[in-house]
Amino acid sequence: MRSGEMSKRENHREDVAGRANVADSPELLAYYDRVEKLELGALWTVANKIEPWEPKSASVPMLWRYADIRGLVSRSADLVSPEKAGRRVLYFNNPGRRDVAASVGWLYSGLQVMRAGEVASAHAHAASALRFIMEGRGAYTIVDGHKLSLGANDFVLTPNGTWHEHGVEADGTECIWQDGLDIPLVNAMEANFYAVHPDLQQTVTRPVNDMVNAWGAPGLRPANEAWARGYSPLLKYEWGPTYEALLRHGKTSDGSPYDGVMMNYINPVTGGPVMATIGAAMQMLRPGEATRAHRHTGSIMYQACKGRGYSIIDGKRFDWQERDVFCVPSWCWHEHANASASEDACLFSFNDLPVMQALGLYREEALRDRDGHQIIIP
Ligand SMILES: [Fe+2]
Ligand SMILES: [Fe+2]
Image (cartoon, rainbow, N blue to C red; front, top):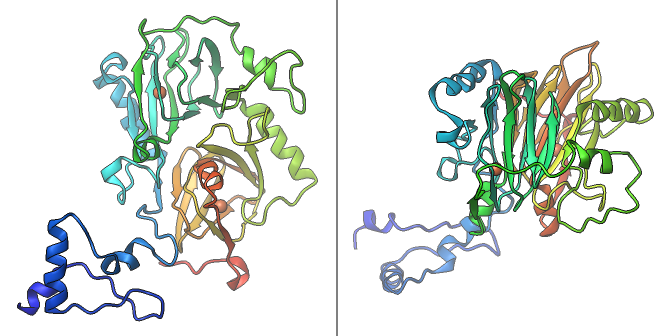
């Protein structure tokens, strides 16, 4: 056997006690050939690869500038109809995850546009979904017969298994929003289903915004409404009360050293995340605030929804302004800063932390060096 052939076979050796470190030999290579014919593999050749010392995300930290993509999103409304496209979306295609159309980790996200009077067909899927409204007037979502009117910075759920559809009222304007789904995760779990509503459109069976009226009062829940489903009955989280909650909390709290003043969107019945697989949060960085770096398992998609600033992700600085979208892959160091000395800045984010927590995989670490700040790689 020639040495050139020997190096072709995968063998991830590490010269560390307790790790696999088996040198190739002609006998072993012949042995690997034999087991391979039976669809077997020798674990010690790949163990160090498949069991890394710590998570190493295939996703790349990315920032997508709204100024670069807004016109292209809008242009799609000239080129394809919602009927033909189903959903008219430009999705964030992480360079490290093109194989699964993921934006970061096991999360998918994109920007969708609809014009006044347009309606998309009603459908249901096993993936959980959310929308965060960026601009426009008159957008609405219907979830299982509940119609929700939507304005800028409103956050709405279309949980897994629910019939849902989106549209813009005839007297509205072009609307753009960010979609977030766990499609890559559900596909990885080989559990995805998709169905088109038999009537293509739902009938609105309840008064508009009824779920917000029932479940949207802080610290109160309706006495005669039962809710046992695995997602939040609130369905929509409006910007006004969310921002007010941040301001009020910030008055009497320093917030988190890593995230500033941060509030999680929750299921009011459980106090837990809004959906079984996706969590979401809104955070406020006060004027001039710069947080310390930490890292944790789980992937995060952010949208700057107020103000401007920058985030340092694994040593790289990403400057953002309103409507820019960026991601933090699992176990990447990250810290955020508000670039304004007079205005606050807000970041909407969604994540797969409920999955990490439910499976016992959540881990978090603070950066101890340099007072919690990363070295910026030019
Ligand atoms: Fe959907
Ligand atoms: Fe974080």
